Image (cartoon, rainbow, N blue to C red; front, top):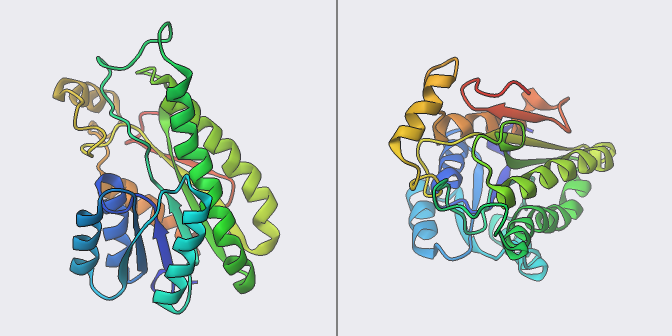
Length: 253
């Protein structure tokens, strides 16, 4: 299915990386359901800017009932339903290495919050998407990961553990859903220059990371978004269960 024929749900799609993914999809003619939790003003403004092929819908992705209602509302509004999901929503987190809790004092509640946001959120959207995807024999799911579990240059214990678990879910889901014509993949970035979550990162850290990459620069949200589009497009129709690292060549997976 061409991107222009799809309605794609982007969780956390109004801000930061999610907004870059939403804009990239709209640029290619896809319909976009911009999911938001608390960023109502940003989501409504973005949908209005992008036109009739973009709608903003609220839901906390960790709430299974709210996600089911989101999908029902999307079907009612679009007349077609959601054919692809990008699980981008990030539980409250800031990439600030100086302020992060160390292993000796980090509380389990921080792990739980990140696992709920990453793994439970993705599970809820996948389960809500399955009936519609199975009915049409087509579906695309892209989970947003991180290169930190290959290269924990800054040990964000909670965030990294949650994304590693999400990669496992990506691969088991790909095996389970492949016979239904549904692919499940992950795109993993490093530090992105710049999003809301990375805004606390000192410029010196960005510059250091840039110096270590073959491209000598830090990946932007727009560059990351283009890689997400690959997995949603017909070009990736035979690709599933994969983790594509998009970080200007820093990590070799």
